[in-house]
Amino acid sequence: VTGVQTCALPIFKEKAQLAEQLVSSGHERGPVVVAALLEGRLYQLKKTKAVVIGAEGGRDVRIEKALDAAPLGKVSKRSLRKIKTNNRLRKQLRTTLAFGRLKHPDAGVRLEAAQRMLSADSSGIISVLSTALEREEDASVREVMQLGVALHDAKGDDAESRLGAIGTLSSSLRPEALTALRGLMESSKDPVT
Image 1 (tube, rainbow, N blue to C red):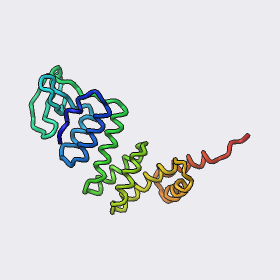
Image 2 (tube, one colour):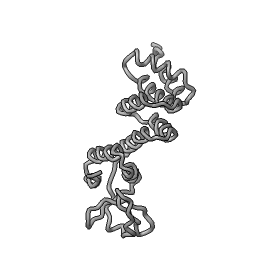
Image 3 (cartoon, rainbow, N blue to C red):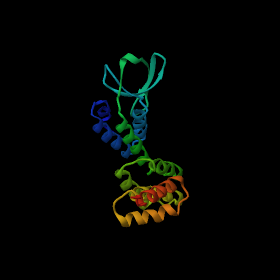
Image 4 (tube, rainbow, N blue to C red):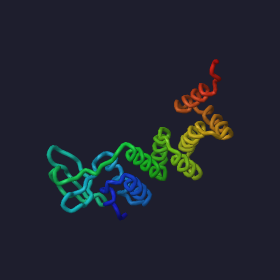
């Protein structure tokens, strides 16, 4: 994985693109670096410009290399520049990490990722969920993925998709499904004139 220095650039869009590359690369440290960025633990050494992961402890920060976890010891906070994020980037990072987890060999990890995606509000999530759904074999994970797609479709403009979503949502006992159905019922009532 190259280009981890891009995280230090002030352009949030480039940071989001790098995060996607890190997670999809298959590099074992990719998700760790993205999680550190999300948690505010990714720094750049001012002197060398190297990107490191840190754990604060008083006046010093214990640091390690971002891509190989080689310990670098403790340094003063003044020798580091925290790599900044904003709310929009943090939302993208959470989604990116969840996407990566949808490919994990452990069904429990995939299930957790799919559940986290239920609350994400992005059309990009639906395409990823739909793609993952095509290859998913675990029934519990498939059920949550189908619910995610249905929650999105229920908000759409296409009547056929909304009807299909209602069928999926009505067969689920999950709170998200019941809330979506209530919302659909409320929005379909004619206002009293």
